[in-house]
Image (cartoon, rainbow, N blue to C red; front, side, top):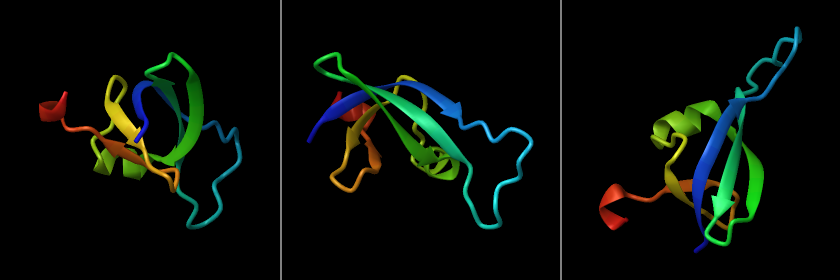
Length: 75
């Protein structure tokens, strides 16, 4: 399973527009792979909080496009 380090987490900009009802606040998560390649993916802010994922966290990118934090004990 690919391993990444979270470089940056930035809340997506919505300007003066309100989010549609029921739409979650999304963050752009910038990931750096072990090969140095970077990618950016959207992730709900509440999910990042629930998983305790912050900048500097080590994560796996699952096949369904979601993130899984790697336990500090495993590093």
